[in-house]
Image 1 (cartoon, rainbow, N blue to C red):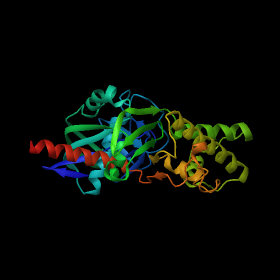
Image 2: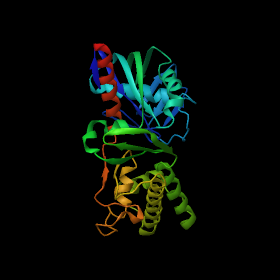
Image 3: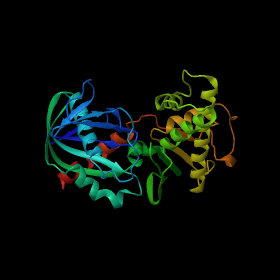
Length: 322
């Protein structure tokens, strides 16, 4: 969180898997109740409805304004960020984003959605919050995650922002993003989750918990039988191969460019990429689409939110000086 003229600039990365701010991460899920839930937790109370946040999984929807969920999740994210600073009342300027090729079409609708109420009161974890929204800056996903390290982007570079629902692809040449060479593909981590879940069901006739699959994808291992683990790993390896096949369709060549990977999918590349997990000998050429030593994985899951915050702060300061 940054501050300018007593206004808190708070970034919210509205991911399909997690809602991120510069300092917090919360699973993108919520359940509504007419009365206060029995068990405590991340409970947000707004307009007489109680929302349990962070349990379960939200279904992928390409239009984030289609329901109330992302608005409620935004209030929660702002509350968590303010709580870290010991604040419960503030003027807030939001900074957020949308998939690369969707931002032009959806920008105004999403801004109006987030700013639907200028003044908002709610409770989160039984603590009251009063917010006055002063504005909202919107950016394309992916690029903000690397805006503070553009000095590394000499020559031709390909940025792949692999989220839960989508993968955003952007060429950055000599530190400058090339808007005409940007794409959004629905090949997010959730596609790997579905494939792994189905593989276990098809091979063993049992249902496996998503939390177990997530642990394998994040860590490359879990406390389960070897046959189940191998089945999930095989699905993850195929997903990573599909990621690189998609990148090659957009002319990715590891001998001619460097690849930067951000987003939650980075852990899958690290754990199941043949060159990075030790299954491929080092020094391989770009023939198969892998380039050992020319791939950078940005592990900070909050990197995009931090980028939103930086860009919004810089833009607002520039306007102030004019």
